[in-house]
Image (cartoon, rainbow, N blue to C red):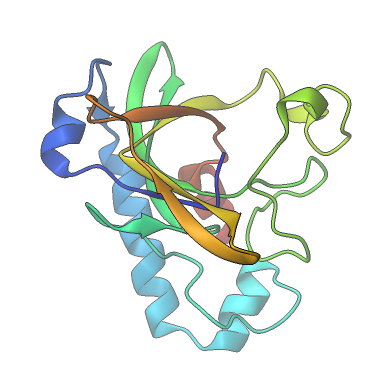
Length: 179
């Protein structure tokens, strides 16, 4: 995937070529978790979510329409559950196969090389489970330009959307354990 990407507008999401329904329960759980976090102390958030240190930023950041999504932000993604496609808040990162959570960890894992997916012990146990698709309008990568690192934005010509496959570690499953 990429360093960051841009969330499609609500209008673009409503015209996706994939049929889906908004998962009201997952979105309600997400809003509940945001409210819980805003009313809790950092120590309570750390203890409840099993973080190693005090959180420096919100663990439930949601990028809105047209905003950029960075690692650990939530964005709308589509997953298949029970034979139906659902639009749910999904975190842009990945959990290690031996962890129950994908919240703040020592290493930021959100990118995988195609040539290593089946060999790397980080990714191998996740292939074939909890997949989904992530719609986005552009993405950003760090590139070298004139000897310096610079961000480049990539946008498809003649298309409104791009799609990326994702491993979906969903909030609705985590939220029930945490709260």
